[in-house]
Length: 336
Image 1: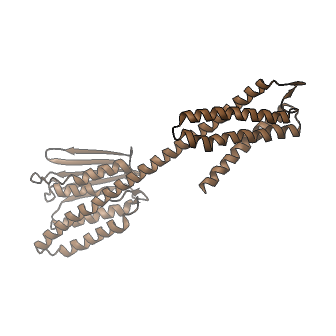
Image 2 (image 1 turned 180 degrees about the vertical axis):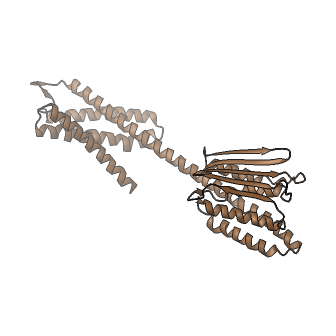
Image 3 (image 1 turned 90 degrees about the vertical axis):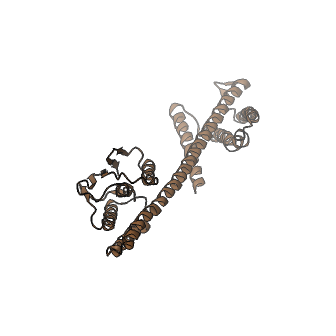
């Protein structure tokens, strides 16, 4: 199908070019139909044949294989042979071609003119071949880059589920170990969260409303973990409409706040703010640092989300992380 389209556009190009020159000739001089057929019929076929001889045969056989001397020699030979061939045709139709104001054009005058025309068509075909190859190579490179990015994103996303599940199971294990009555509720919340992660977050983007509900479920799970003694100030301002967002993008910030922050101090609650202004999202997290928490793996989530932002929202985000002595603050501005 793609090859058929290429043939179609080539035909359209040549028909348009020949028709344009026929129109100019008819408008500017009185010329017979027979002369038009000879000049723009026979000789157009010869010139187009030279074009495709170079485009389809000489370039692939010599130039693409870096046989530069053979290619140069073949071009010179093609210029000479086609110039001689044109003179032979012109001699058969000398009334229309060689006869000018009652005088015959000299051989060398016509030969040089034909050779220059041949050079033009060879140059045109070479330029087109280079342009087509450049676009094809650019497309191949883009496809390879997209495949690489897709593979990297798939790897990054695959890290999210085990990382989150590891932390959540630790929390539920702690509740079960303490024989807490909230353990079943925590398992139910985890089930809802995992259902979203496994079945609803497979698209490139999801409804922002669903992602916010997922964040609410996660915060509820953490509150259960702390025996409802976790102090979290979570606010969403602005209108939540039809906005879309890359799934599982914001959870790393909230997870980090709970894992490395102090959640049970009413004087310094974990602050989470999401402000929406159309397609502009502002996300703010602030938590008091837990000075005894020095988990070396704690940075995996934020490193992951930073890389995902670079890949999925290039030039559409601004991330500012402030690691203060007592506070950890993250600010994310994002164009959805």
